Length: 109
Image (tube, rainbow, N blue to C red; front, side):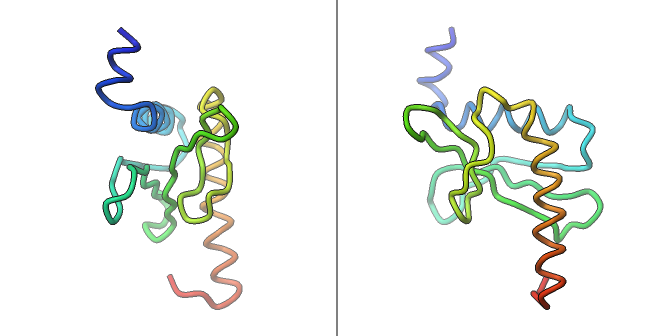
């Protein structure tokens, strides 16, 4: 059944759905949902419960034969998809840090 599911949904979307489930079950104060931006590949839009302006789009790309969750804006690798259970805590830290950095440099929110 796994290969039929991969074929129907595509590996990228399947990995992002797994990340969505991991975030929902993690206890981190985050919410997320699968979205498409400007006709590109799907991404997971992640938002902080503490501040709706703290967000990040997470994509999924194949790098060197391995699927990785990546920051959609920079392409920076976050964690391999096989380590999906580690992703929610990392996302919470990155969302907190990226917005704090913008605030300290006078960036708009």
